Every structure is written in C-alpha cells, then in structure tokens.
Image (cartoon, rainbow, N blue to C red):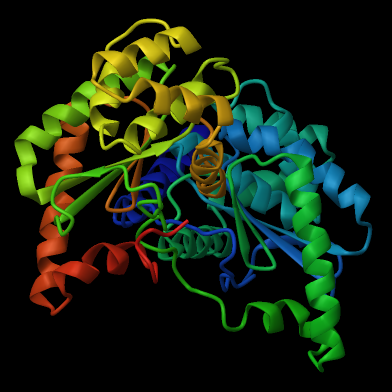
Length: 432
C-alpha cells in the first residue's frame, strides 16, 4: 500500500514540477503596488471580514518560510480578529514538498490543516516521507483510517487545489518562497516583524477609509484589491541617479547600473568584470555607477565623497579605478590619489572638509534602500537584478538577452532616447 502511494505521489510531483517549469522568469514586485490575489479554495484562518488579509505563498521545505512562520504567529497574536491569514502552497522543492502539501490538505479534511501546517514547519527533517507524515497525523490526533484513505487516493480535490495555487503563483510571476501579499501589497522573503506591523497598521487605516467611503465590510479584501495588478513587473525601477556617473553611449540598448562600495573587496573584483564588459559590448552598453557605502566599512563613506569631489573635476572614472586598484582609504591616502590623477588638491581637500558631497552619496544610498539592497555589489541589467560579484558569463548571457529585447522594443516604435525609461517604467530615467 505504501509503495502504491509513493508511486502515485511521484506521478503527481512530476505533474506539478512540469507546471512550474513552464513558468516565466521571476517578476519584480514593487512594495507600493497592489496585486489582485484571489483566495480561492486555499486554507485560511481569521474572520473573512477582517480589515487585513495576508496571503502567503510557501513551501513546507523552504528554510526562509520556516523562519517566517513564528513571525506570522506573533503578528496574528498582536492583531486578534483583525487579520485573515491565507496559506497557498507553492510546491518548488520536489516530491517531498508535494507530499507535505497534500498531507496538510488531507488534515484539513478533518479540520486540522493548521495543526498539520505547524507540525510540518516544526519538523527537523524536511525530506518528508509517507511514514513520517503518518506519524505527524497520529501526533495531531487525526482519524488514521480516514487519513490513510485520503493520502492513498490523493483526493482529486486536494490535488486540484495545489495545481490552482501553483498556477496562480506562476501567473503572478513568483519565483521563490515565501512571498506575502498584505491586502495585495507584496512582501518578499522572510521580512522582520516590524515590517509586517507597519504594513498591517497602514492597511487597517486603508480598510477603514474604504468602508467609510461605502465599501462593503464583508467584501473589504475584494474591494481593496479589485483594481490590483495580476502580474509582477518585468524590471526593477532603478534609475541612473542624478550624480551623472555614467560612461558609454547614453542611448545604449543595455544599461548596467551598479551599486558599489569602494571598501568592498568583491566590488573591486566586480569592477574588473564591468571593465571587460564595457570593452566587449561597446556602444551597446552604458555603465552607471551608484554609491552604496556599507556601514560596516568605516572608510567607505569618505571614499565615496572623495569620488564625487573627483567627479566635480571631471575625473570620476580615473579616481574610481584608482580606489579599486587597492591601498588605504584613509583621508591622507584619498588626497594622495587625487594628486596622482592630477586633481586640484586644494579644491579636493576643501570638498572633503566641508563634506560637500555627502548628500549626493546619501541620495544613492536612499535609492538602494528603496530597492531593498543590503549588500554590494548589486547590479541591474536593464532592470534585472544580479546580486554579488558573479562570473562574467552570467552578465554576458543577460546582456545578450536584454539587448535582443531592447531591439524588439525599437522595432515596435519605442524611440532610442525613451528606451531605458520604458523598460524600467520610470517617467524620468534618473529615477529613484
């Protein structure tokens, strides 16, 4: 009997995996957007007319989902009766994930979905097997004969629910778990409790205002998300900034924006990759540097201000290359480098003393934070994000893809000077 069940689950796993493999590249979810995410047949707890509905797409084998689980429990305890929590299975970690999801839905047939949900997330071994899930069912007090029958038969309705939830995740453009939607507003990954509290407080106010304007209380979630987006965006809304740290053709087919830290050794290595790409792609590639001095690097802030002082004298890129070539980044060294590349040293020193360019650096840091950047280097190739100092082949592949997409946009009538802002959906390409 167990062997038949395993074979049946394997067939179902292949079907669900095939569905996911057909999905498109992961999309971008801006925190200020609202998405229409139907509840459907998914498991939920909390009042249906709660002012806030949180929908989570999750996988029981996902480490980040396990980290988020206690945070959500704390959140529900902080807002009794004000949150409806909806769990949607997004099966992305193979057959064991499918087994776990089917187990939770089977437990739901006996009114114990959430007990099984909690037991699965508490498990130390997430290579779930039929025997292990059988023990979990016994632990939470299920009718074992009924449970085994449900699991053996795979309950067509349960499998249909999983397929429906996975199809919705693909349609939205999800590519990882966990993903939350708080009254339709996206939160990617295992965010901290404070992030959720701020968002829930905002959404309680938004729900209250909507009800005052005539929205039906018992359909408040539908009212708040009715005009929401049905799919994530194709690119991050990353601008080139207002500091003008750009090299290459201003109307290039591909724009590579890089947030870097002059004290970061990975950025120094990454700078060599960027130089090679600039040589290979010529007029098809525009390079944009944006500041991201990390707090852990005590000398980074002044180094970035110094680079702006060099930019004010028309020599940003020469100074950029000198900083990344190695050496100290204390004030005396920064001044010495300015002298080496032929800057007016008196003017340079005065700019450092006055912290003349601190605000310019801070503007880039604020833009990075708005984009959710926490480390360096972080790159964007026509709005597609690449974290870390990746091999040059990763960038070649992506640039080739984005160049072809840009040519297709030109063929459809987009002008060269509007190309980048069209791709990243900004009114002004300087953007945030």
